[in-house]
Image (cartoon, rainbow, N blue to C red; front, side):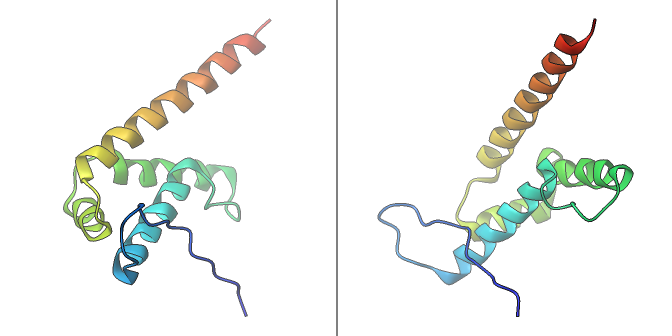
Length: 103
């Protein structure tokens, strides 16, 4: 049997709510997909393609994302802003690394 663990944490002072924990875990898995941790079994072509799709879930306004954030107890605009910032920083790190590798 597969071992499942809860990844979401509750904010200090917040009572445990299984519904919020469920939706927070949905966001965590979506974020793992967006940064490429969820696609190890796919080839590189599919991994890149699915990562772009998963990132668009965070970056492009959509009702599903707003609903999931609301159910998780988060502000969807804040989560989107933080995701954009993270993706931009990672892209800059990769760009700088590749430039430093050039002869």
